[in-house]
Image (cartoon, rainbow, N blue to C red; front, side, top):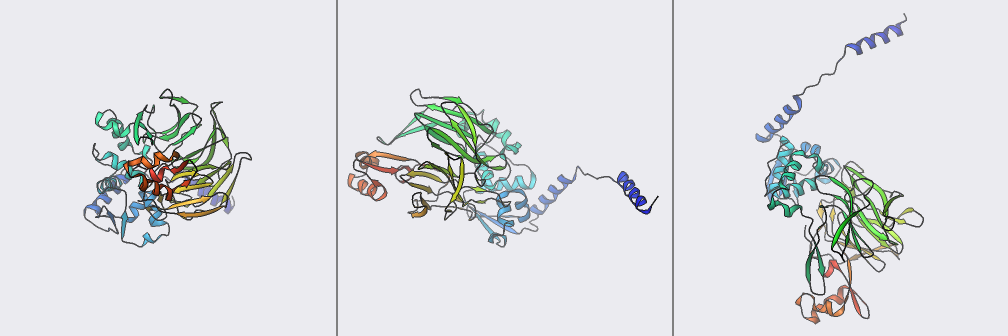
Length: 424
């Protein structure tokens, strides 16, 4: 036997006798050690400021547990060096519950805090919500309690600007969140989303004449945080998320055939974005993804040609808009507010994309920073605009004239300017 053969035989013999040691107690021991460090206030290296109150924590543990903090502390941003981190749109109570879960894998929930904890978990990207078994099981149990039903309700209301009045209409057949809504002909479509227990592929259609919902052909797979638009009587939905994956898929629904068809994928993955149809083209704007390992704004604007089934890119957005409001008026796309993940803040900025000139324009800010809003455009008789809200006709008309495009017999008003009443 040669020396090489002896060496190979020796290696094989060593492999046969080697074993991998696994400790079933290690995970619990690690958690116990983290709790001990927390209880003794040892090695804290970051302070979270929530609703003006301080919460000390360990930076590395936050980054290991939440995509939000991983992007903040490991993404080359200034927060890597800062000792105090200000968190917005999260309650102090919810943040304490989230930290309890991070350190102990447990959290105490009740009717008064479960909604705030869900919101905080979504914003911090703690875990996929369907993977948070203690939270979801408790939430499902609460569904059976009448006092909690209102939080999970699929109630819908219709707004009549002529009389400044909301009217309740038939509820969806199941709750949808992070879904998209499109109008084709006389029907309203609610597409996909999730109910914070599971992701959905269902599509519901509303008939206002019958005040009823019915299921139509479902999507091929579950998707949420996507966006939709209508072109030539067909619904297009693009991107979004499935599980923890960001998508760039484009699907087209033909209401007459009641079927979905896959189209060319978009250039980049994104979710919580906007979509608009203008001059025969579809535009994807805003949103976020985790292409670099942490959540970040998507600045690229993608343009799709339904005729050629091809994508192109146009002028980048001047500012990040995640969960924005989007509306189309004439040849301009309005993108309002939202959340910038690069800057960790909500925004009150309004930017306008001029499709004809292929450029961005600045518009007046909305009254307060807001995200997750929905927008639309209404064309109303001048008298309705003047009388709306009980203000004097002159003041109302002057304000409308300053903010809207004037036509001979009507005033075009976008919902975000005159009729917005949405809150997070």
